Structures are given as C-alpha cells and as structure tokens.
Length: 265
Image 1 (cartoon, rainbow, N blue to C red):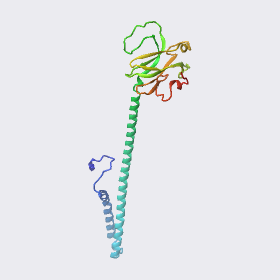
Image 2 (spheres, helix red, strand yellow):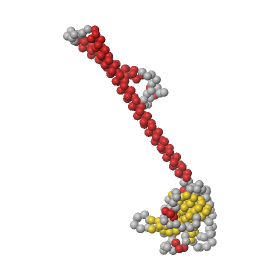
Image 3 (cartoon, rainbow, N blue to C red):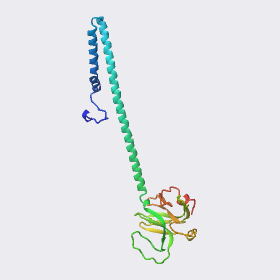
Image 4 (cartoon, one colour):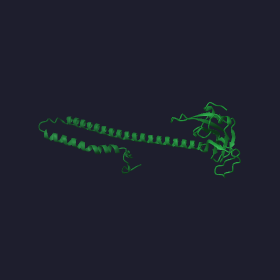
C-alpha cells in the first residue's frame, strides 16, 4: 500500500482508515460551519431587543432543525466525495484494462508474425528466374567455374536452393511477358507448365530446366525480357509454395500455379 506522499499524480490514494474520507470532508467543511455560527451570533446580538426569542422548546426545535440541515449537508458532501473517488477509480481501472488489452493484442500479433516468419523461412530462400545454361553442367553457388563442354546455350528456368534443406516435387512455369508499352504494368501469360514434377532438388544448388523448343518458337525473341519464370515446390515441412511470375512468394493452399492461370499440364 502506498503512503500518501508516494501517490503519483492522477492516482487514487488508498487508506486503511474507513473514516478517513469523512474526516477529510469535515476538515474542509469546518470553516463554513464556523462562519454560519458567527453569522447567527451576530444576528442574535443585533436583533436581541427587537425579536421575540420564544421558549425553550422552540429553541430546541430550531437547533435540532439546524443540526439536521448541517448533517444532511455533511452527508451530501461525503456522498459527493465518495462518488468522485469511485469515478476516478473506475476511470483508472478502465484505462488499465484498455492498456492490457492493447498489450495482449500486440503480443498476439508479434507471436503470429514470428510463426509466419518461421513457416516461410525455407521457402523465402528458394528463387527462380529465366536463364541460359550449358547442358550437362551442374551449377553450385560459390563453387568452381567448370569449362563448358560445348558452346550450346539452352533457354531454361533456373531454380536456386539457398537453404540448407532440399525442396520436393518441383514444377516450373514459363510466362510470356505481355507488355503494353505505355507505362501500364505488364501481364504474365502462362505458356508452359512442366508436365512432371522434379522429385528432389538438393540444397545449395542451381537447377536448370529447359524451355521446350515449341514454346521457344512462339516468340521472335527468347530472353529474360520476353519470358519470366515461376516455380511451385514443397518445403521440408511439407508446406506447398509457389514463386509467381513476378517472383513473389505465395502460399497456394489448394490451388496451383497452373490452376490459377487456367492451364493444366
């Protein structure tokens, strides 16, 4: 329990004395009562010869009435003070409840964000893009550059596994870029979805998947400005993800990239 000197501004002081409030009210009210007595005494002295003071029962009745009036006034002051204190306590309690509710909400949001970040941790390290590669070469990020056995370059989807765990059941998708050329956003049109999924891609590798010739011949040019790549895969926790045509990581749930673009195999 706080001492009165320790009570912070805006707090309601607590007291173990049940009559403390009444004592405070009485202490604040005694000047008014004293002033009333002085006024009555002065009036008695001034009008002592011109007024009829009556008998004792009349005086008793008058004093009793005065005391009853003072008691009622005192009770009103006490009730008002009690109401003020209770209202202050109610407001403080309501404010504390709001702060506690905000804290709980913020903590729940932080926990949800942490869970989602943990769920996306591996998938966020999987990327895909349009690339050219030499058939028969395996590219390991940070590894030695091996000489190309031929000068043939194939258009392909490159899928990089930057996590320490493999990904499973990978499908790649080639999108043709429909650019209106008038500063409006370009639209990705799905041209090809791999018919068979790649069972496993090991961690720390860049895996290439060739663009079929019949799809490549659909456009006059074949490069990263004409085609973009998407990928759909399952992480080590069994969660299905996809990188869409713009590289954004999405949780497809029941849908797939091919289904979202209206193309099966």
